[in-house]
Structure formats: C-alpha cells, structure tokens
Length: 267
Ligand SMILES: NC(=O)c1ccc[n+]([C@@H]2O[C@H](COP(=O)([O-])OP(=O)(O)OC[C@H]3O[C@@H](n4cnc5c(N)ncnc54)[C@H](O)[C@@H]3O)[C@@H](O)[C@H]2O)c1
Image (cartoon, rainbow, N blue to C red; front, side):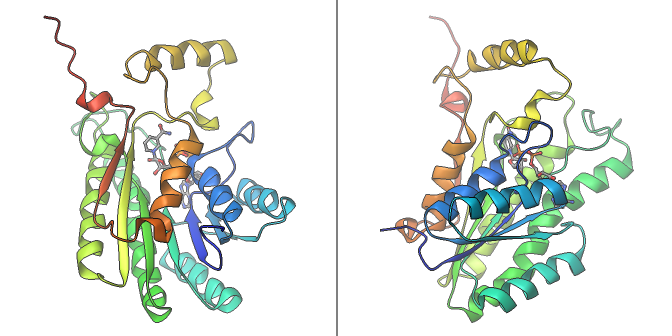
C-alpha cells in the first residue's frame, strides 16, 4: 500500500541540484513522496532545475507538475495555490524547504549587511510563513493535512560568525509550534532539524577530491561517523507527511546522527 496514495503535496525548494544536477533535500523529498503515490507540486525559483525534478518524477511513471515561484512574492505563492486547486482540487501536504544562502551572511550581527539580513529572513523564514498562510485555508477546506518544515540543528547550536541563518531556523521551529496549536486537530505541523546533509550544492567551488576530504572531516565529528543523505531526510519527511505519524504534531525532530547529545569529555 502506497503511503501517500491519493494525496497532493507541495514541496518548495525542490529543484534537482545546481551544477551537477545531483540531489537537493527538496528534490529528494519530492521524488520520495511521488514514489509513494503523491501528486507532487514542485516549487522553486530555479526554473530549469525545478522542471528537471518534475520530469524525473514523470519519467518514473509518477505524477508531478513544476510551478516556478519566488517564495518572497505573495503573488507567486498565491499562484501556486490557485494552480494546485485548479488542477488537483485538493491539498493534503506542504513541505517547506526553500532556503537561500546568498549574500555576505557568514558574519556576526555587527558585520552582516542589513540588505543580506533582510533577504535571508525573507526567503528562509518569511517564505515558510507565506506558504503556510496561503496553504492552510485550502488544506482546511479539503479536510486537513500535514505540514513539514525543513529546519536545521542551527536552531539549537550555532557556528561562529554565521548569525542570520540560525535566527531563521529558530523562527521556523516556533512557527511550527504555533501552526500545530492554532490549526489542530485538522492540521498537523512538524519540523525536521538536520545536521550536515550532503547535497549537490555542497561542492561549491571545491574539486571532487577537496569535497571528499571536507566531508570526511565533518563525518568524524558525528557519532554515526558519516553525514546525512538527502534520502534519509526524505524518509522522515514521508513519515511526517503520511498518516503513519497521525499522533505527532508540533515536534522539531533532530536528525544529526547523535552529534548534539554527544559529550566529548575524556575521563
Ligand atoms: N544541506 C544541509 O546540510 C542542510 C542542513 C540543515 C538544514 N538544511 C535545510 O534544508 C533545506 C534545503 O536545502 P538544501 O541543503 O537542499 O540546499 P539547496 O540550496 O540545494 O536547496 C534550496 C533550494 O531553495 C531554492 N530557493 C532559494 N531561494 C528561493 C526563493 N526565493 N524562492 C523559491 N526557491 C528558492 C533554491 O533554488 C534551491 O533549489 C533548507 O531549508 C536548508 O536550510 C540543509
């Protein structure tokens, strides 16, 4: 029995990677939900790569459409919901995943330019708010559903000189709880807080050899001795999106391979 059979799911930030076309977290989630029977609405600002996710799903004989959208635009977000309603007449699941890392954001609060602070808040936090705001009325009209917000361990622990991103993720966790309480019992809302997840975009300007060395170094700091895969995030998202998690709401689930509970004291 397919776990998302008959359900319609919107996944934001679901473009299939940047350079190599390898996976992002959102594309892995979109592909996973479709493989379990969902009709998936792929949403991203990146038109070429967003279409690639939908094409990949369709090639596998599953159902998806791509709708380009900048999550900072209320008109774009409203258009996603209007189009979804027109095509599928129902709405069961929203996965908020879109995030931007643009600008001079590897800085403390003093040195982060205001324009970059505002941009990151507007995409990473307000984008989740906008999608919730415009999706919830349709979800209620259709009988209810499940919202999954992709947050981060950065909501709890911070890296030096990386100030605005953790603020958005802590905000997402609070947003998750307010939605869970305000729209219970018909809507459940949960967040996933990953540690380091290997994505296509991780390569940045590094060579393949540099990427492997970098990931190996990070892996050594995790009790599970490896970083998380996009499929592992997609598996937990599927659980939270489906009726299997029917009594779970308002939770921010940590997926960090045990790193945050590990004490490095030597006795
Ligand atoms: N990769 C990690 O280690 C990690 C760890 C914890 C949390 N996360 C979270 O996972 C989510 C997915 O990130 P990822 O790691 O797959 O990175 P990614 O950069 O591959 O994916 C982010 C997607 O968001 C899209 N996007 C950016 N700005 C947008 C806008 N204005 N409107 C619409 N779409 C926009 C991008 O085009 C991209 O496809 C993010 O919320 C991120 O914060 C990632």
